[in-house]
Length: 157
Image 1 (cartoon, one colour):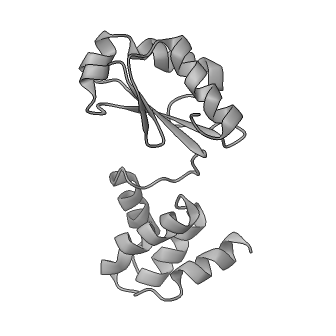
Image 2 (cartoon, rainbow, N blue to C red):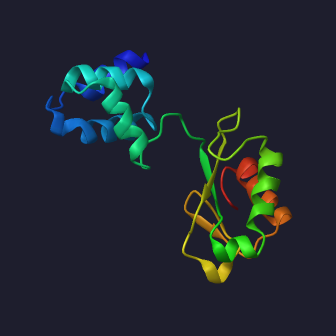
Image 3 (cartoon, rainbow, N blue to C red):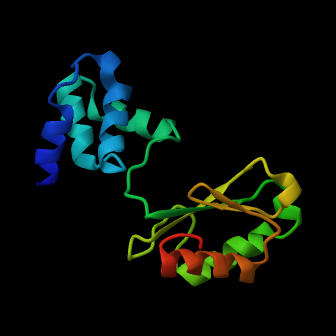
């Protein structure tokens, strides 16, 4: 099924008012994992909201993504406690190891690297989360070993 066909199915039953904009964006992202450019124009046409405004909503709210994410999302905390204990070095090591910058996804779509301001686990600093799993008291080497377990096993085991 083409992207155009998928969008037609996703958007077929939905309301067409301006009030439906965010729910439509959430539905597209829920189905596709992100909101592709084609969806912006389809939703614009369906709701009567200019495409520039749809894009503005997408970029205003952190919940929306304009690019697909990897199967595993790695979030490295850069909050104060984590920063003081070396999280910047962990992030740099992961950037080199995965050959991506924060906000990017590896070529094999396996990993997306993200930097976050706080994960609420200061007592475990420095911390990273892979998907829903929290890892603390990290070093750059430990972080890379954890990521490689996800690559090899498809999970943290």
